[in-house]
Image (cartoon, rainbow, N blue to C red; front, side, top):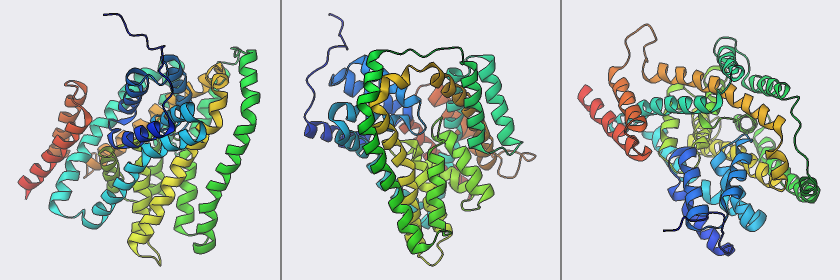
Length: 426
């Protein structure tokens, strides 16, 4: 049979046809960033042939340069490529709305009924499986990112700075970016007339998108501060998760390390075991894994309701966390899409992002230690580990890494094992 040519594309779909596809995508986008990107490639390039391989690869490289969930950003860009701004909005919303609604429900079940024996058992197994997922992530990202002695040194330095030096996470990323830029200072980025024309044409559209985006970011902040106060928990939640969204290089595992440190150790809004439970629940939903930040906001509101009811406070805080987390991804793509070639071909930008990714490996290492302490060594490092949780974590890692099981069955097996072991311990 002749080899298929993925450079040949079919006629662009109608907006209604594409919208139906994006709506369905949000319910099947399991598997984390790698699995979601694979689904997008299979559906957009291979099956439907709406875009060619080169366009998809350039879009993916562009999304890798940005903070935030790359799979969501890729979906937004692909929607924009097909139908402009309205296509990007429909693609992004279709990708995240099912996960947002589902996680609100799971979050309520956790905070209201998490002490029930069967729920506690299911979460016990899921939390142990999360250790395997984070370990797998640090190995994979490390292999891809630590390709030189300089990058390896940056990863080690970021781990030491965060774990022992108390250096703020954003500062670590800024220093890493500066070092990467300096290392590439003698590399001149290419410049072509086509790239220059692209930048000029896209400037007007980017200005309009940026203005609308600023208004959309300000409206929740003004609404909350005028009704509840500037120093209220909800205003602080919105501002905190906005900052977190701008430093989410490396995906959910990296940002969760930063967010957990701040919310658990510095602000005291969330307990350490709650953050682990949130990551476990987020793994069971479709959509981007960074949806875990919605859970963190929800729990912060539930724990400190103030004059509101716990559920009302939690829903508001969770909604603000989601808005602050996902709005930047839409803005980054809709602002940057007209400048795609210029951004992806800039050697200094690539070098800066490579250095940031290396630093993120150190960030994920700090998260790994925190999760291991909470789940595997609940009584402290000097005491014996929780052997049942350790067994589930090792089994989950073997199933994922060696047996190549899909994520869904592994999580189901871990949850069932946790419930079974908890029942045995009664």
